[in-house]
Length: 558
Image 1 (cartoon, rainbow, N blue to C red):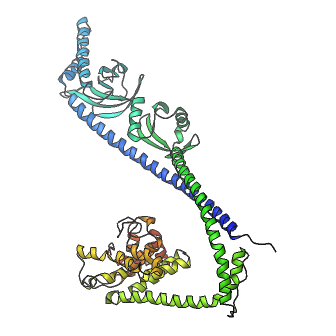
Image 2 (cartoon, rainbow, N blue to C red):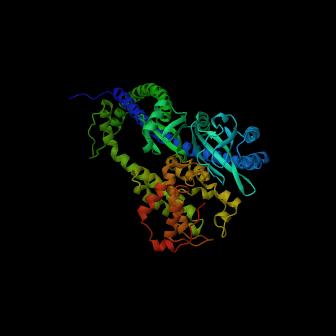
Image 3 (cartoon, rainbow, N blue to C red):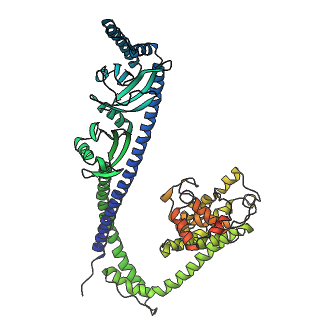
């Protein structure tokens, strides 16, 4: 017969394999979570970039509109354009007069250009031809150039215009003398690399500007820009470009011009993964070192005492006869030596365990009954909460060991109210804020009471945390989401349902349908969504007619 491994060897092997499996699972979970979190973050960042761009554009347009409204009242511009628009017979004097008008208008628009941050300030006649221009890019708007979209423009407008020198975003306002339209005053910004860099700083993302589906400026890399151009007709909010997943937003769509904002989810994920991998590698190294040392010491520490104890127990129980026996497991020589002694002790241990459990249950039920006896309105509350909590736990398919902890923890969930005054617990009117603060002490009081009894330790999280809420507005610690133990979240739902459907001195009981509707309404904020769903599925859904008969739900706060 093949001899089993020694306890030392088996313990170290199992320990190393367990640590390796756990670390592998942790790494996979970290990678998946990191990608999901990065995706959510990048989507939110893009949305924030869109909002920032919208705010910036709105402010820019208000500033430009205000500036144009003031500039358009310039008497020099109006008089010059009016004179230019007035037909005159060709003559050397007329040509000289036209030159004087252009010179006067040029000086005026140059002055106006110093008052605005735009690239161009220009005047355009009624035919859409540039009359005079000023500003850093004035040479791109030479006199006589046709500005599409501004011919006979008699109302303020915005848009994108294409000139031979490039694409421009513009805002215009008409110039009138009396009832006569004599031209337009225009401010414009080049859709170029400087504009793209400004948007990139604003949105913290890559920018690509296209006109007629051709890239004219941007901050993205050349390979990425080529990929965007190749897919320009099929761009989606998220898509794969050059083997990476990108989030894409269209910041501007005006005429033939488009401004796209994009960021790589994969690039952000790689950075997060590198950080997680480095941290996990450090943890793994020390985990293996500590696990090896601890398992070796533990196995050596346990092996010799087990042999000694087994021989002692065998001698003490030699005269006893139990019909039930346990076969040797073959997992280790040490455990095989213990099986004969264990067979002898089994009967006694079973009886002792039954007695201990009976005393355990009796103690817990006595504590719950003592609490309920203080107030006739809450009689049976702890028992009902315990029963409903077990229903929810089993609907969630929790192991029976956890169900047992929840059953007894729910019985004790309000034990801390023993430490509160009767005039608060039995008050016939709603509590004042000061009294409610006293009520909020009962989870901590209950935990303090039960902490003195060692076998009640598994139930402490339920007693202490059953008033915590997923949104962090619970008490006593303001925990959020999964930071709250599942058992406490289950009891919180059952406790709230029984509180709503039980009469109190200051209010009648609410119908089950109304209580279920309230649980659903506050699912995700006050109550754990999975627990609410499990409860509704277990107890059955109320009919629509019953729900319609109920008053609007109100949040449960205690």
